[in-house]
Length: 371
Length: 98
Image (cartoon, each protein chain N blue to C red):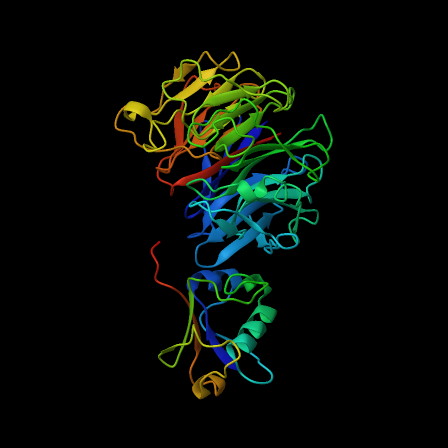
């Protein structure tokens, strides 16, 4: 009998939600690490019992927690994230040089085939790797030291490396996305990187088509078709059919193309999901209606998914790491809100139900499909 | 033995209840107390001060004997009641929102 385990990171702790394959009845455990910001929790594809969690606090800094029993118990591992060499400067909000300073881990991406190997995307933007189950971390400095690095600027949420995608079909190929620098690709396991932002157009920067400087909110990939990437940018939903070498807009008939998360159906590489948000100054759904939009054509043609979602007086946000899909036969889609709701659809988005309604603001949602 | 009071979050991390005691050799300074504390409870490394520079985290404060020692040099001797064990050394999470 298949089951699912959902890891939810919130502003005040982590929660683990479990259900059988029907996804109707749920057990909720938590808060784990109560009172701490949990930016991300994610399980290893190679060992589903192995989970990693990013635990941080404005007072007490960064910790990384590891579970070897699926989230029932946790133990702290290494928390020293030291940039390689002299880190130099990037641009501050006012355009002046600002030293690279570690603030927190936004995203943890376990290796596809080794439970002891895990990548960490951090603020100020950098990529770290552990090969000993999180006990120690070393930077992969090729990204931060890219020649464009000194020109990178933070987005409103900080200069965070928030997305890491690993390509199972091409060993060594990986993607990272940084707000507000853009998307980057490596073909040598993170040693060297190139910006992959051609085709992006951002009105808020001096050169709208610049090589870097784009506020990429999220990129997503279907593992069976890794050359196709989808992107939710600050504004615009974008698609690449050549592994990021070029992008074109697929916002189509969306009511607004601002938003944060984007994800791909587990079995249909052309079926994608976004949550339109009114604007960069109004971080809530248009008209107070919480709607997921689904395209079954890889973009451009979108349909609103509303059944079971609040259609009046709803003013929550859905953050970039707060959407996930399971891989059951009927693909489950999950997302969490800044209002503390976690919604599930067990029918690929046709209908939705809340798993929980009153958690702290949700920062991240991940799901494991267990057999 | 030096008596140390941790803030609630760090007591949870260190898996201790209430006040703890650390053995400090040599001169009793803030640096020596924090070194001994981190040696006894490695999970606290990086939570009170930067692991590389040793600089106090911005929203952590050090109090003892009704004094704010947060801005004292780390190698300055601690007050005699702390070194004598009659007063605790307080590590405090600053009141700063949240």
